[in-house]
Image (cartoon, rainbow, N blue to C red; front, side, top):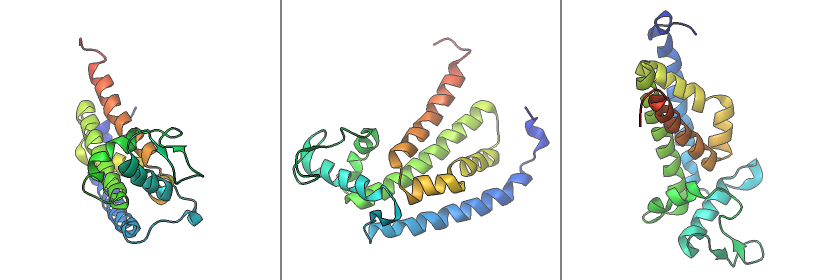
Length: 176
């Protein structure tokens, strides 16, 4: 493993600034889903996630949806429900499409916070951890997967994995 002092922070300034600006631009571009409902013609999951949030707000958790897939479709039976459940507080005061977008931003913010916690555990500078965040969550594959396609439950899982990794590593040599 390379010594962390062999890579000074100044090497990370350009990637952090350029990827950070691109990150903001893509988030602003994705905000158009608030005004224009995303369609499935570009192979995305946004519309089904927003529809599930709508039905969750309308019918409740683990209920049957009578007006989707020829009736009596079990809501959240065939997909991981944790992201949807965590979005319920947002559904109380936002429309489902806005709640999905706000949830995306919150998940990115929490992932950054959790990576900064990992950086603190490993004694890595904040600049380097922001670079890790951008390389991990803002590479071309992640942009297509999380933003364009809308794999929000998967982003939710990655976000919590970072926190659990930090906790497990922190306590691996300590008594509980």
